[in-house]
Image (cartoon, rainbow, N blue to C red; front, side, top):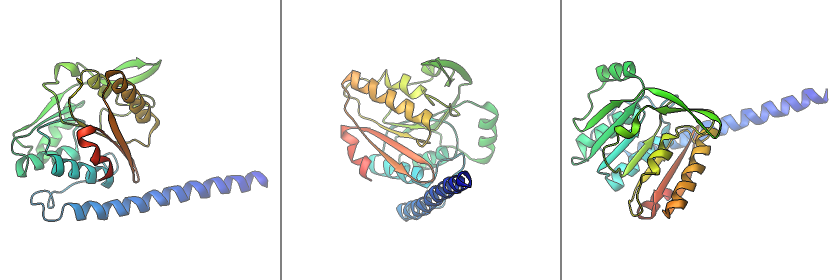
Length: 240
């Protein structure tokens, strides 16, 4: 009997946590829609928000970062709904910006192109998935990603490759190791509710500390969590 009661309590707590996440997501949805009012192109853009794509918290942060900071060079890991959003911004507002998208699946990239016309300044590079060991854990990486990185970027959007249970999306750590002291940037890191993404964030902290790069960071909680990481210049993004 006691075990049944304990089980019911656990199930009830889990249910309540899920309901709270749903309520937070509803609130983020309203905040997001308020934030894009009057933005031609963006406000009428058809987006499939949630599930494998970014949630409303993610798109609110992305919108504010693009609108407030107007990054010139954007690197996006993972092709999807956020690619549509960024590309639309390029055509509507960021007329001098460039956008490089790294995608693991050539078939998905082909299907995507039949459904959405990217900006001429949005470019897709295909990097198949390989597996490496990080701290004795198997981790998915983009193959030969370093050969595709063309320049320093002001904004890094990390939503790919597919997640790993530990040290997920570790490519951003490899990228961070090449960032020089004095370079200003913003990183938006999706799916931060997962252990793998948390592992990678802690590795990023270590890399930046070793380089003497001061960072600021904040977590935005919705149905999924989003981490934003910035240098000193963009630290106000942690309170948007």
